[in-house]
Image 1 (cartoon, one colour):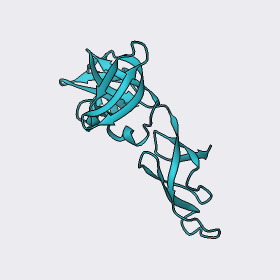
Image 2 (cartoon, rainbow, N blue to C red; image 1 turned 90 degrees about the vertical axis):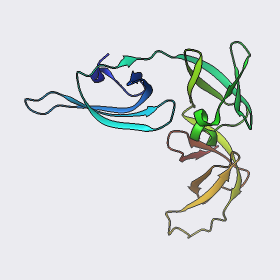
Image 3 (cartoon, rainbow, N blue to C red; image 1 turned 90 degrees about the horizontal axis):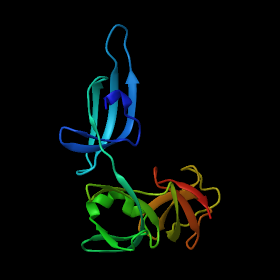
Image 4 (cartoon, rainbow, N blue to C red; image 1 turned 120 degrees about the horizontal axis):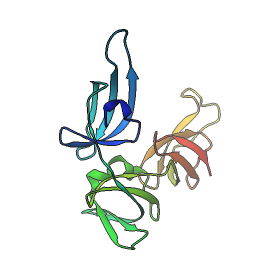
Length: 184
């Protein structure tokens, strides 16, 4: 596979590391070879590769198995999920879960990406519903900051919401951006 064929979400191997494409943009200047500006995340370390490649550079595609997992609990070893097909428990280290921990609550279904029997990453649903446990008081007319206030969710994650959101409300949060979507 050449770099030119990479699209967002593709997984590939380059220089012995496995990456997932965050974005890839093809540019072409007059009478020159095309370039691909690529931003990809290293699946092992979580570091970001941001570089420009000639459009004819070859990379090896990586094929992954997608397995639906349900979140059970977390402990000192990591996060424990259940494979919905085999009912086996899978322990995923905290460094693989990363920032996804802000959105994971009991019984949430995620997709586990496995390669050669090893977990590479988890994919969250686009949005999750989380309960607000703490909310700053919001006062009508307090719109200096655009009518927003900080609230703490059941996972410990803090987000900005409109002033009318109170403790005990359930809100929908976009897992890609970490932003408030709506009150449920």
